[in-house]
Structures are given as structure tokens and as C-alpha cells.
Image 1 (cartoon, rainbow, N blue to C red):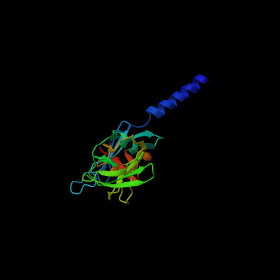
Image 2 (cartoon, one colour):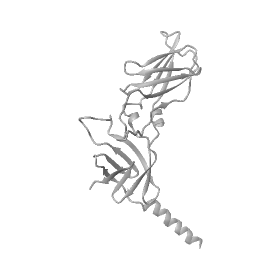
Image 3 (tube, rainbow, N blue to C red):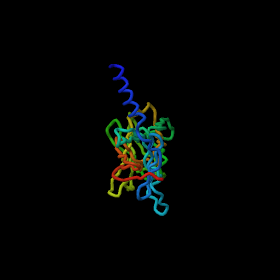
Image 4 (cartoon, one colour):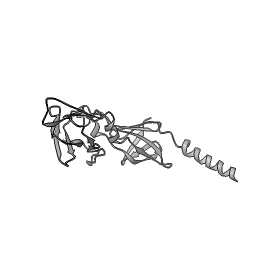
Amino acid sequence: MKKISLLILFVLYCYFVYGQRNLTGIYINKWGDKIEIKRNRLNYKIADNLECPFFYNDTLAKCVFKWVDDNFIELNSTSPYVIACQGLKVIQSTDSIVTDSIQVSFSIPSQNHLKASITTNAFKTYNLNYSKNSRELMLPKGTKSISFSISPDAYFTPHSIDGLYYGVLLFSSIEYSIERKTNHINIEIPAIDDTFFERYYVKGDYAKISNDSITWKGIVFVKKE
């Protein structure tokens, strides 16, 4: 009896692991947007619009998925916080030119206008309208710690015709202690480029699988022959 039970469990395991359909391929909706699947990875790409490009990058979502039953898969993408922290550096130094305050410089590759905010240990907030010509702000001498946040500072294209947005609107850092004698801080965030705030953040989304089509966020994508 025990052997039979183990055999049944093994058969069920093989069904759920290996018995699901292979979704690898390209799926297209009526507007020409694509879902590209390879193994358990799913990328969502919008149709090219050279006359009026809405986004800096055509790939708005990069996900992994798993089957939850015969008809649905669950999609998840890497957290934008994790992405932003990749390569993030807070470099403290002593500059003989600056003596009566702490100069904070941001180094962000995005060419978009952003809003940078710094909160100190005194619970005071200092704002900067970040651009390629405006990258620095000054903090009072004696500030002991800071945290910072970055957010878009201008209108950007929604992700759906209904005006819905599937990304994040803010990146917030942990608190950083300021070393003694520091009067210059350079904050480098290489991951926040022009595409950072326009990407989807997919967490626990479900897509329906039916024959040769995928329905995600109410939109049908049909497999390309």
C-alpha cells in the first residue's frame, strides 16, 4: 500500500512538473504588441512606433512564470528596489573647498527630469529638481545621517488606454550614517536610467492560457504561426 501511495505521488509530481504545455514562442495582440516566451521567462514588448515613440525602450516587462493550474500561470518580475540597488554607491569624502556645509551630488544616467529628496537625522527634507544641469544640493554641517528618494518629476505615458500605470513612482534608500569630517557625498545610481520608471513591476499577476492564446491584463495575445 505504501509503495502504491508513493507511486501515485510520483506520477502527480511528474504531471505538475513536466506535464504542463510548453509555451515557448511569440504571441501578438491586435495592436502588434508581443509576448515572447522562452522556457519560464516572459518578456512583453510594445509595437514599434517610430513616428511617435511613447517609451524609451520597447521591452516594458521582464518576468518569470510558473504554472498554478492547467489554465493559469503566475508572473513575477525583479523588484525595482533590487534593480536600483545594483551598483548603487554612496561615496563620502573630504573636500577642502567646502567647509561650512555638506555638498551632496547625484550621478544618475537618466536624462529625464527627476525629483531627488534627502531626509536628514533632524527630520528635515531637502529637495532637488534633478537634471543634467542641476545635480547638487547643500546640507547643514553636522548632519549625522541621510536617506534619499528619487521619483519622476514630469508626466509620463500610462501603460494602458485607461490611464493605468503598472510601474513604481518612487525609489527610497536605506539610512546612511555620515562619517566624521565628511563634507562631500556623491550618490551614484547607475540603474536609474530613462527606462527605470516606465517598466512594469509585475508581482503575482495571473495570465490565462487557452489553446494558442494568452490573456494578460484583459488583453488577448495569439501565438504567431
